[in-house]
Image (cartoon, rainbow, N blue to C red; front, side, top):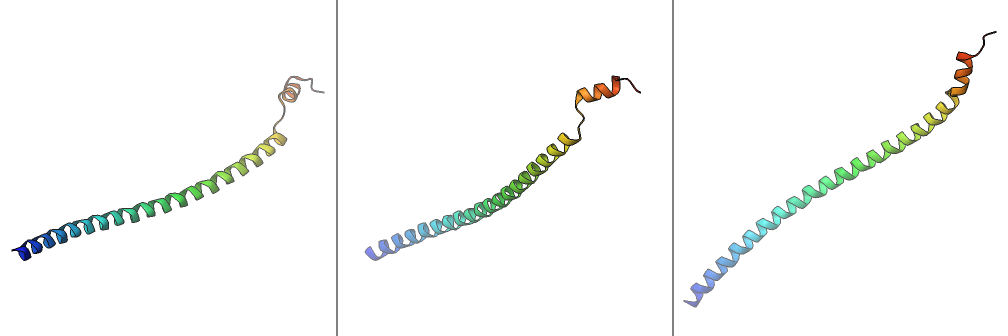
Length: 85
């Protein structure tokens, strides 16, 4: 009788361990998915950072160019409203 009880307890433990193993394998698969998503987000972040740096560099160059090309408003007024000779 004790052997039968022991056998039943061992089967119960095996069943519990099997469910725990399945749960842990599912958890491991979820972690792999999360890890892949984190890697993707890091790569996307790096790409966005490069784009931002490039845009700032272009903005700075464009600002310098426009400051040299734009005619001041008082000069426009003089040209448009001034006397032609």
